Structures are given as structure tokens and as C-alpha cells.
Length: 192
Image 1 (cartoon, helix red, strand yellow):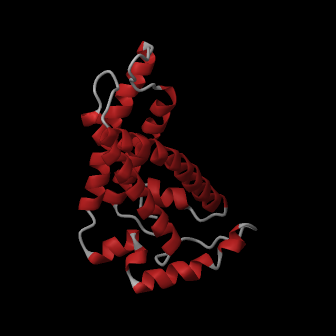
Image 2 (tube, rainbow, N blue to C red; image 1 turned 60 degrees about the vertical axis):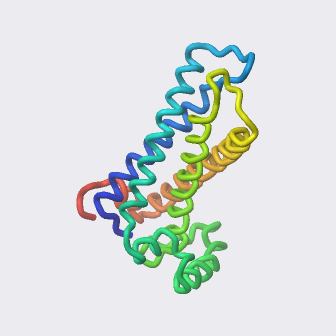
């Protein structure tokens, strides 16, 4: 699969800011009425908040750069009949993945495109729910029922993000080990 420079830059930025999100989440404690937090826990919470805003802006920028239907169908192949057929066809190959039969990524790589699109949607949902928390949570951590719903949603989606990142990185490394040069295609600015 070929990636243009804007996609590569945004991938780098989104990947690194999401990594910061996951790391800061590990060490932070959000405010709660009556909770005592260390300075480090407070700092990591603030880092998490601000990097969350950055992730949301980057994901929105990525969507801005998807202007035409062809670009949308690359990240969200299930929106076209051809894409749905391609996904179903590739799903038949999944048992072969378990024994190391991975084909090199090509332009018709519907599952990989779906995974990238779902990752962007997950990051967008996390950014929106996190923004509701950022704006709606009181300094002491108290919140109304609506904001609490978004907090619960944000925490659930955050767990899904861990699985997404681990799976995404594992597949990229597996492709790399098989000689498919996946990492060079997305992270190198030289023509591949």
C-alpha cells in the first residue's frame, strides 16, 4: 500500500500522541471528590488532557484530508459494495494468518484499510468523550450524569485502544518480519 506524505506525517503524529496518551493514562489519577493525588499523578492527568486535545485535532485534520469518495472508501471500505465484497473475501484468508500466511499489503487490502479506519474512529470517539470530560468535569472531579456517562464511555474506549494498538503493532511487525516492508512504507519519507 502506498501512503502520501500527509498521511505519513499524520500517522507519525497520531501514533506518537496516542502513545503519550496511553503512557500518561498509566501514571495519572483523575480528580475525584475526596481523592488525594500526588503531584506526579496530577501532572500526568494534565498531560493526558492536553495530549487528548492534540489527538482530537490531528484526527480531525486526517478527516479533513479525506475529501473525495475514493479516499473515504480507502479508509472505510465497508461503505461500498466492492469494499464489502473485498472484506468478506479477505476474511476467508484469516485461518492462514494463524500459520504465517500473510500476503503483502496491496492496494486492495480491505482488512488493513478497515483497521486503519476503525482506529481513526476509535481515536475520534476517545477525543470527543475526553473533550466532554475536559469541559464538563468540575476541578474536584465531580460531574453530572451526562458527563459521567461520557467518562464511562471514555474509559471503555481507552481499554479498546490498548487492544487496538497492541494488535496493530503486532500485525505490522509480523508483516515486517515476513519481508513486506510495512514499516518503511508508513514511516519512511523516501520513495519505496
